[in-house]
Amino acid sequence: MIHKPKTRRGVETQEKILKAAEDCFAEKGYFQTGISDITRRAEIAPGTFYIYFEDKLSVFRYLMRELGHRLRGRIHLALEGCDARVEIEERGIRAFFEYVSEHTGLFRIIWDAQFVDQEAFRAYYEGFATAYARRLGEARDAGQVRDLNMDALAYSLIGINNFIALKYLIFDGTEVPESAIRTAIALLSDGALIGGPEPAPS
Image (cartoon, rainbow, N blue to C red; front, side, top):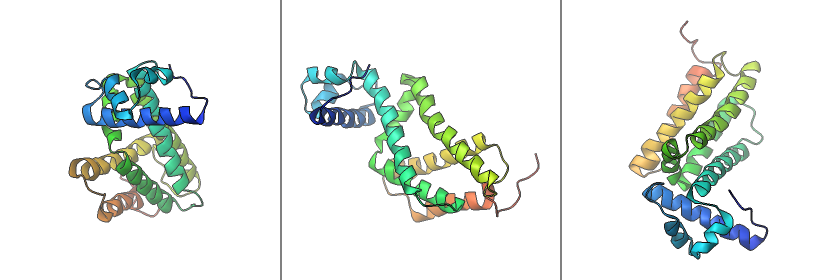
């Protein structure tokens, strides 16, 4: 259960708890993190935590939803005023990498969700994939994307971006190089998007 704050100070305190929880879950993992770790990082009294969240699982679930919502918002903002499919994909990729570079703990939290709360894990990816598949379907109808399985295409593209981010931002601890972004765009422009070679017959 989550208790929504009613004052500006309450909102700020809840944000401190969420940031502290994100950092703790990213560093230690869900199972090794205690509420005391979160409150210590947030610099609040232990009892203050329970004003906003019922338990550790409730803050984890809320954090999953918030991270997904904010990431989608960042990408949506980056796509404003853009109509060409290749440019849409490129802007979306860049916005994703930018957001993850600011929230590298996102990957640890998401992977932990497989074992902590599979429903939240599934909802996180389905939230992205369902909206993405719908937009790809609209682009297909407009003649910008090949007539493929849109669900499979959405998950494939999400996977590409996830693992590029994993390689550079998480494993190497560096920025995603321009050459990697251009490679991801090339896979799209020479494959799924109209203008590349026809896919092999099934």
